[in-house]
Image (tube, rainbow, N blue to C red):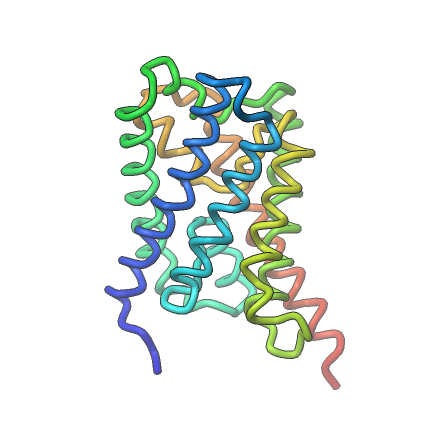
Length: 224
């Protein structure tokens, strides 16, 4: 039974809020209480938060919580193209609420640390965000949309959250490990800091579309 778009958008907004707020809370803990959490804990906040929100809402909305995922799945023919813009709007709203709440409840100096900031050049960060998101969307296409994949379905939240944890741990120190335009846009709006934002908008979106197209292309090679 198809779920009404209004319910799916509500689930996307709430799920994006929960995912981001848990991740932002990890950043706040790392900044305010460095003895309590390490960088791997921040990665776990985002990866674990994503997995938990997919468990909670994935059966309602698909659990995208990421404009690059929605665009990538649509490009690969695995999500209705007409639903992409409404999903983006819901994801950005959920992200903004998460960023505003995190700034309000955690110490005031935490806000700037929520903004995605690379430690390498913008061009290198762009490539890292693109490649990371490309691989991410290919993984999602397999575990969440390909019914022929033996690990499709129930393993999806663990695999998807696990990818973000790993990618944030190993790529994050260089690009900041966003892989999600809404994750970077929301705190940028709240802080009024749009430095490097193009990296985190276009890198993930292009990577997501390429990932969706690549996975569908690979699967079509197996068809008679």
